[in-house]
Image: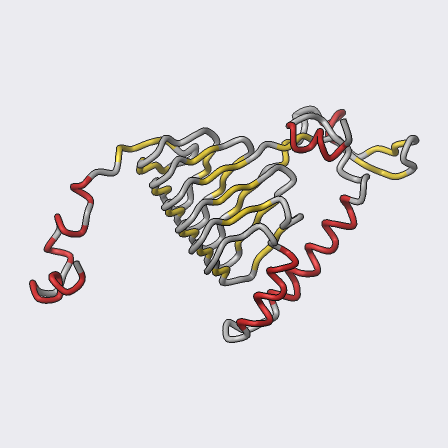
Length: 216
């Protein structure tokens, strides 16, 4: 297996070979370019994202600032949105579905570093002639129609099922089944999201009945 194949397979790999450092540097530069654009510079932003995130659907909107390690290892479905300070360390594959709302300061972290410092600390690799370290990576998947609140952290190897709502500040360390309301550190399922949560079931949220009929 190549080092890149090992990375995607969740095996120990060397992150400083096979052009990966150069790819990360390129992605970091593209992120910096995006982060100094204004919201109104739509064409310029799209050109940057075409290079940074070639695997995205239609009408994906990233408020910025954004931070990706590779970009090319991340996919977005149609109509997904991320607020300020999106961080994606996409050594492993990151798959974000369609119509996903992501709150500010959210992080998707695929690297898995060894627990023992003897394995984790950098060292000189005589084979490649450079300083490196050893790590693994785990894929992250977020299903369609999810909402992740502000400052949510999604850890390596996690799948969040479609239709979930993840409460602000949660740290997601395990899979969340579809249509769940989940929150906490670590994130746990509170309950299922049901028809009782539809706005049509809550007239008290509207200023008056006319507005409610217009909105629904």
